[in-house]
Every structure is written in C-alpha cells, then in structure tokens.
Image (cartoon, rainbow, N blue to C red; front, side, top):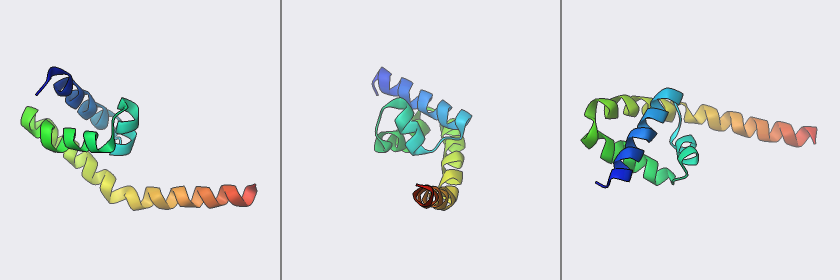
Length: 85
C-alpha cells in the first residue's frame, strides 16, 4: 500500500472517531468519494490497525442505524422551507 493511502486511511479513521462522522461527511471533508472512504475503513484499515478498524466500524454501524432519522429530518426541513417561501 502506498504511503499516501496509508496516511489517508489513518486520517479518515481518526476523523470518523472524533467527529462521529458519516461516510458522506468524511468524503466531503477529505475530497474523495464515498466509495473510497468506505474501502479505506472496511478493507484497508482492518489490515493496518484491527482494533481501530473495529471501533470505526461501530461508529459506522451506529450511523447506519440512524440514517432513516436523518433522512426524515432532511425531508421535513425541505418541505418546511417550501411552505415558508
């Protein structure tokens, strides 16, 4: 694995842990695709640091279990703004 990828994997993982960030937020922050973030934390990170990989996985699983709530809130805001305008 190239050094810049190794470094990105660790930076992305640290960001997810500190911010409890979603894959989408992380991808936007680092200027990479969601697929890249997902591959970094599910494939590459467990090979680099299995313990950190497990902790990041728990954050991502928590985010996944809450995504229907975030989506519902986004839709609510969208239609609330339409009524106001």
